Image (cartoon, rainbow, N blue to C red; front, side):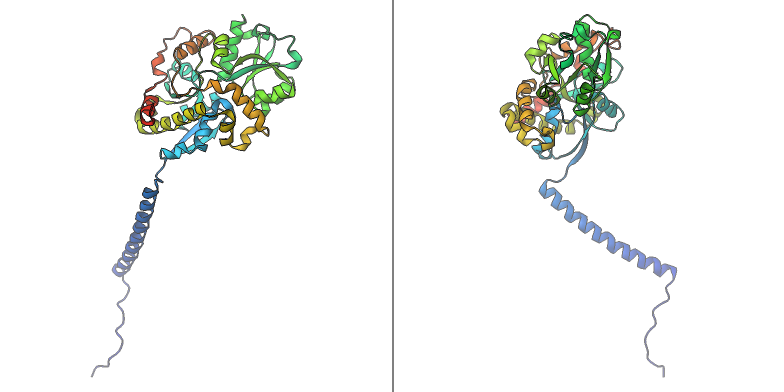
Length: 363
């Protein structure tokens, strides 16, 4: 009689090992798929599907570029289903270079870069216009206020700009040309904004320079500088430059815009809501929404500067009438790469996305 005993398991051959491994992998895959389905359901139900976009700003602490951070703080990017990362840079020209290199999706910077680059064969397009005036002020060191009374007195002086090739560079050179000076009559020194600008003026590295709020307010409060040319409102800008000067804007590469019209529209929707918020709220109410470090330690001074320059912002994100023509005229006065070139202004901006946003929001 054959003894009854335990049946030994079959030997673990290659085939059995493969089978066991596949069963384990299948179980893990099912678990992963189940988890993913649950997460997907939760994300969909909460509206958490966000498209990641990176925007670089030519100086986020500057009030001229306030709409970028304000849109984030108000939650308008998220309302459009966007996950937007804002990156800071010292000057608009640095932001422009990052865009051309493909490192970011868009730029919050001055509109004039779209014209300057078209002359170089590169096509950028503004899709939301934040301002109708530069919001810039040409300051003069108090030590030299009796000697520098107009741009004609820039001769032999060192003038501060945020960066070479930046919009402050463009505007400073135009003011000098209107004063009858040539490029070699003065020196431009890139000193950034904020503390670096203030230090350059304190240390007599520059005798005059162009900057924005809150730097303007800081230097005026301490008595270290006086205003030479003020371009914080459309009226003062027209007196200084001969017409409206669309400045701070949101622009992208034309190639990106052609490939991503839906994302562009969502960004335009968010920014237009912000421009409406700015138009319908006081400087104090706007300041309350901004990060506290933007006040540079003096909220009252921040509010004062914003109140003085709030008129620079467009109420709806639209390009001001005759604005592009003024910018082109300014650049043609001194920019050799623009002089003699055929510039198609219709390729430098579009109002279609802002128009669509207005329809969606209600005129």
